[in-house]
Image 1 (cartoon, one colour):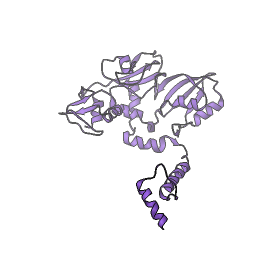
Image 2 (cartoon, helix red, strand yellow):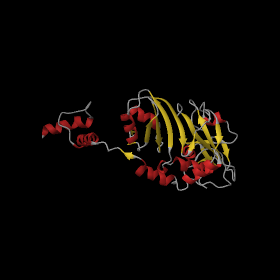
Image 3 (cartoon, rainbow, N blue to C red):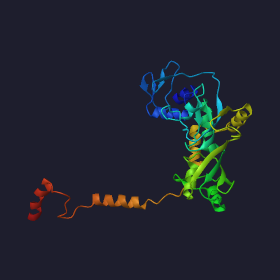
Image 4 (cartoon, rainbow, N blue to C red):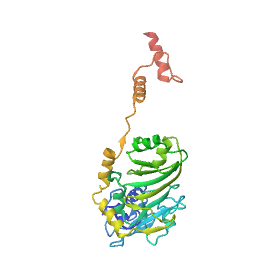
Length: 297
């Protein structure tokens, strides 16, 4: 079994998080640092930060809907104060599916199933996430038009999305992307600041009346709908290719004339001989010896 799957099956973290731990050298197999993609056998002794990891076979899968309050960080790192795992304090090891930044609130899934994490997180699978956002200036028709048609951030242009006005300063937005702090960056580009941001829906699961700081188990109907939606989801490698080709509209390539000019000028300086009498600093011994020869010529 691949090492990242072995770790995720244990309920320690997702496969993506496991890959990060492996790259950071925090995972050992039989006392030796391992590499990404390495295979692990049942007889192997696997450790993460000195903690023994055992694969739990035939274990009960856990799927939670959690209303994350502001100030809670979506990380499994126990050293981070206010991390989401310690806040929930679930009796089994669980981890978040995706992220909500520290100052945002609302719906987030928690699970011990590493396989479902990868499928839901794939941007190319177009799973909807809905947010209600309040900004520091009125929501105009022009603002709605620009937000819905795509905003240039993070060296790309966001995918077209549905944006509707809720009240004077509040709008609703439905995304199928998960760029870092995407909504906040989109608003900053349009010269406004986010005052509050709440995620109200993931796929077909609504936040409903779930109070901040509380959680509930996803019911069988919700899980059936989720499994149906992710049935044809791309695996990790396929999805990364799809997201590069289809997931985001790239910005026009920036001109590289300055870089080329700089490179050509540097190569010209290196290749062109120095004029007589030109020096950079003190003359070397070789140069001082060669001067009389020039005079003889």
